[in-house]
Image (cartoon, rainbow, N blue to C red; front, top):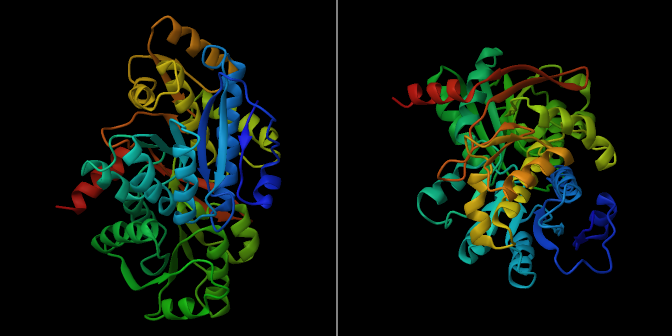
Length: 422
């Protein structure tokens, strides 16, 4: 597959292992990617970028858009909003891309949306930004309808996490959270549900990213004699915080957010300290796409596991964009924006991941027939705010491995949230 990758650091280029071609074909359509290839969320962005690349490879091998390929111009946000805005601005103003896929984390996606894509009416699809702020921006008419995401909002995940924590006997908890839009919103939703369900929060301690030590935050969080720590973080900083918590005598019981479902986090902390660590993630409803992705992603990505955070839903983001470009017939932002809901709409012919399925989709689109992509994360449909609904995966760490131990349906979480808000 042909790509044009402009990474902001040599490390990112080596990590992705991609060499840019000397020249792209004249008819190729360039899609921008702004991913967190380095920084605290680097593991997510590397997995996400590879998954989008895989979706585009499958699509191009199936025939592409009238024989023309989708190619990616991938930029590293360095997990920083200001860097992300600069990279997105170049993609929109200089490369004239009709779509940006990214970012992964909300503190990257939100400034791209408000500063670049919404004002320019360029489509933006985030695989993993879960902040409720993104829904609020759409509701308030500030997104021009260009934003879509393939992950459920933290407005529901916070509620699911509260119920799950209490079900695991975590009744008195301290919270340490990253001090950004994602962390603040997740904690707000969790706190509201947890306390109404009878849980006790002993302290809430925000932290700023990339500190060498978090001993002060860990010590502060221990006030009130909590029984467990709810750590809302990313793998690198999260591991440093967890080690500080353990070293200072904190109880070895943890509740973790979706991004902490990471082998790197487990290794850095030590599996022996995480036998009572529980977490929630945006879940999946298995389809043929799930089976295809799980069987093929590791070999394509050079060793990244298919259950790496953001990988599955990044493939879906790439697949949906690809099918929408095919439906639009051209690299036009307005036409692609209109086509995105159409390629996942009820009543279309079910389409799954992979070259053969995309070839089937392209034939149907050419005939003017509707298609409905059913993704790696399950059947996807977008509401008027670009949001999806789906189940929540309940997991714990056992013997150094993250193991699924249950699921909460979107309907159950929505019902619980409505009851708690009465």
